Image 1 (tube, rainbow, N blue to C red):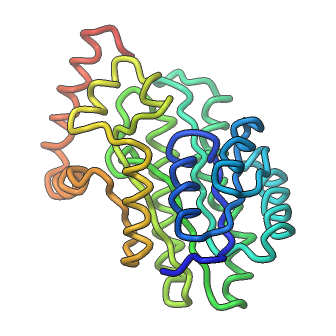
Image 2: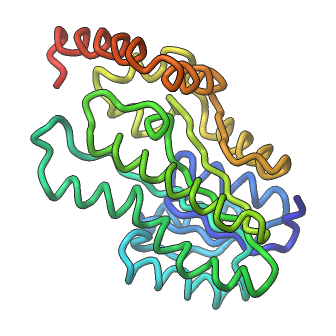
Image 3: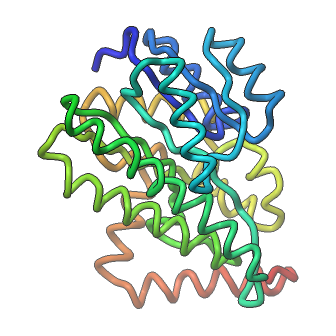
Length: 259
């Protein structure tokens, strides 16, 4: 895949995985628009990759529209859109409605709203690439957080639908599903931190490299932690045994006071 001179948008790129993706794609010659709700962080990363900062909301319909319009104005055309922004809010069955709404907006609907604006243009121009940063939680589950689990499953499902619907028309879709990554989200995971790091906690740069390899190879499902593929297969083949094992993990968290 040749990104030299291509226009790329990365949301949630002020920190963590998004920042690493912006750096990795810029290293391939891409012209990168850096988006983040943290305006200072977006500007810092843009300066690092010789890109262009467009701070702001990348989830609401209005915010997505403003971002894509600004990116088109700067780039001329958007060839790759990396919908990377995500949130981990809400815990337990009594997670507030506001947390559900925010998780749905950022973790799922942001992808839908971006695709609505980009795919029709790509169909006319000859193709494009859409990257969804989901999570291993979107293939498995996230103990303690129904909001994160449900919305990341939604992100994976939408990415798959987008791929099977438009893949034969040169719309390339990649769905990134890492497990533990050394980001602020992992630092704030509390009792789940050790569990998420059970196999290994990767650096954001390692996740970005996995994405680049998938873009080069044309691979849909990006698994920076290969073990997640084994878990996913076991879950599908033996759902009752999988759930029994997950219940044991939940019982351990309960014993430690986790919800």
